[in-house]
Image 1 (tube, rainbow over the protein chains, first blue to last red):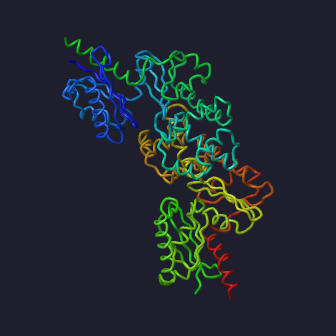
Image 2: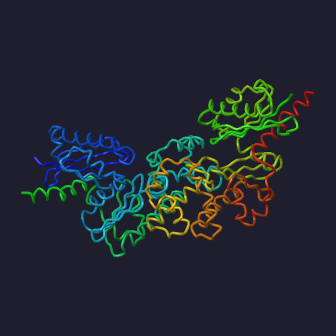
Image 3: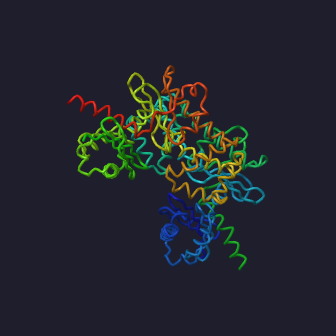
Length: 293
Length: 293
């Protein structure tokens, strides 16, 4: 039996989907972080754990992994020789490592031209024009990813402290945030000291909730973030391209707030990044098998 | 012999100055981090190491520390019961823990009314009006300290990546910064991943250097930071107060760029934070000694 595998992995977890040659998903698995930039051995372990879970769920033995043809979409795949190093470490019959942005693009718009914005904890912009893929942003919370949930949550805490200090006007959202920290600014400082990007990101939905209510601060933060999204789109999306997808947890929250010139080009995504990895595997490996007879 | 001691301690180091009852400095010492928020025992060790170095330099024995009356200015002194806890841990005859902002204020303007802005790796605003001290900002790199060197350096790296991605226009400063990282954006990401606030801060002087040359990006970053400084001054400095000091490594770089309404109130600082701690010790303890005979 020929098996195809899609993997969607990053700093927060790893998901696997096992499929037949036609791309029909047989089973799924998931595991912990697969960060090939900081821990390639740990990434391999997570990838195999998610794969074995999927094999088990499909009623297959671990040994079947040697007949798998896999496409893996991983954050950091385009840095140095991470991708080829990992490919050699895997027990699969074939393995192709792509960037997380590439499988997300393929998942959202298939193999047509278009632009996809991934708005989760971070933010990445990826476009395909005449078959050529280009990515911008996605350099991480500390120096990039301006409209991502982590930045939006962090910005909220900064503004909450500025309101506490009397530097900026307060708002119901700032008061609500202060109250969530027991009205003690030191608790915000202590939270921020240890917070991972995803921890900051937990406050992002609150900003949208208050923006819907017309909160002054919430609207300011969302508009500021939208400006960074549209600036990046101005730089990456060809003016005549007509397909734009906003994906990730915050995608549907930002989408209706885009300017008309981008809102008019919005399309719902075909599928998620994991389905993109599976479909890329069909394209790469199922055809090759067919060619070989 | 009655001894006075001033201590200026924080996350990057601890400085001590030993003085006689008149506040004349006899000797100095320095040691490692004294962060009472994260490591009160380590802070005690650093404070004693700096003190003993100063005692030794003055030709005194360690045992003399029991006759010391000290004022310690420490970051985090105003959080919870840190200050009183540390006071009890010290072997001195008398010890009074104040915030780092308080000794900086006293060092810069003595006991008069006025406003002091500490612009180092972080940024803190402190004012004294009719004897009452108020502090804003200084909540740390992650969610505050907008015009501090760490934020300015981080902002530079973010803008450098936005220029690399073609989202913002480039400039000689952005190109210079890119070149410092071997024109490899991944090296910026990797630096940022591990960078402490003081590491980001090492790039702040470059921003001012290029602002002097009229670099578009440098001017944008400096003006943005100045706006945050003046917003905070608007909130904390009484309109009729006529004494403003900008201290810390970046103080003299920002000062000439302030708007006229603040530039006209600028005064050079009398002394540094450590001298402020010593003068506070004179006020607190030398007078008491005099009263006691």
